[in-house]
View 1 (cartoon, rainbow, N blue to C red):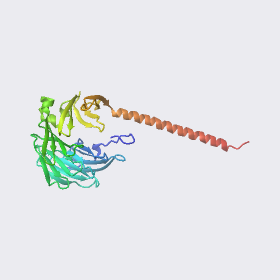
View 2: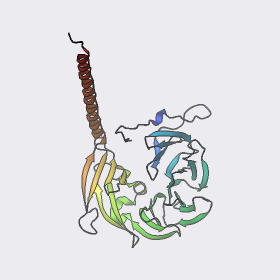
View 3: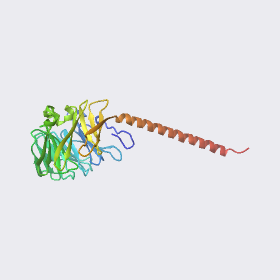
View 4: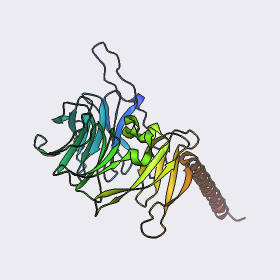
Length: 333
């Protein structure tokens, strides 16, 4: 991860403490299963295949605060807006909370499903915790009293792979499922307000459940939708074809779209939106490959050269001052 001083912070999970079984052998690999930043970016947490929950502080500099062990391998995690807790969903259907203010404290069981949990999310005010499982259900509970169920969002016919409380519309929930649909919900009441059939837009390939579960891993295409908040609908805008399978995507605050793809030479792509009149958002996108390592190494080399030159100038200046001082101190004959 980049730091404020242009150095990279690197953490090797293989060097972290591992939990051993009764025979004294290590279990699991170092593969990272889930991770998340806090809303302010001040904290970062990850879980891996060795059942570790690792918490980092990112400001003023990156630092590993704790390595804790979870009960089951995790599928998703989220950090509260208050940045005091981490909620971790696992494969057994349970959600545990872990303190950030007490980074060594054990986890606390908050709620459970009878099915594997696919995702967990929080409302913007931390009042509601939302969980999605393999049995088509989305449950909405009170964060401070998770045993109190507010509503269920029912309608998907297959597993619910991803849920998101929309930042600019905090009463709306977006969900994706193996039934090839995207759905919008008034999640506090459990009412479905819109259903988008991906098969009608993306063609027959979108009817395969694994492609909707993580579409970018299965087909080299990114589909872009726009939310009409007034009508509470998703509007299909365009698709971007990739040369390689996509791994992840993210929008920047200014609207740039970043795509992580399976390509060693150009793993990261950036698409910049071009706005041409009202209603033409993302009608034209300009692609630019981004190699942050090369750019970082160039900046580092330039900085080292500047520091070296500055040091030489200081040494040269000190030498000249010493010579002048010796001359002034010489006795006159």
